[in-house]
Length: 111
Length: 115
Image (cartoon, rainbow over all chains, first blue to last red; front, top):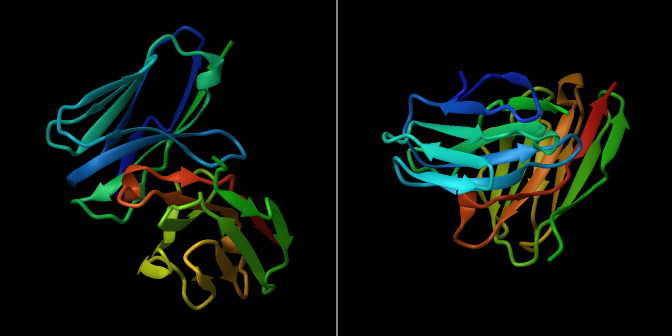
């Protein structure tokens, strides 16, 4: 059983569409990180959220941490082909410094 | 600033052979992580070092995997003997002092194929 469940597992959309991916857990996390991984590369950190209810924006990407710190979402507005990649959420359960990753959401944006 | 360096990038070996991977973290980063990423899954932590001490190795298959970070800088991960199920990408990451899981920087990984 994954501590961090990500959905959907796969997403294929057209350029210009909006999308939301989710990261859910039954456990409380002191922080959650979102990464993007492109084929043949390591994950690249996009954002860290630490406060329940926190919303962070990074250009067309909006990240939200649930009030109870058990879930998070990533919303992309007007997706572009350059957004294609594997989106991973990660965190330390219950304040642990041991990182846990979800399985990821594989996003393909078609031109 | 140079990123996390890993070598080799690709390795193909037969089962029961041995293999070693090398990682050089970002200069000054105290924490170093080794992950295993199987195709279609997220990275799984194998071992975490703080300087040259092991913080966590609870998911490291110690009968065949070993890792060291002797001088608190670069690190090696070894598999001996390899099994088919070890085919995966092995990722190294590092974090600045005091940042831990809040801020990890990953290398490009080593793709291992065991035949």
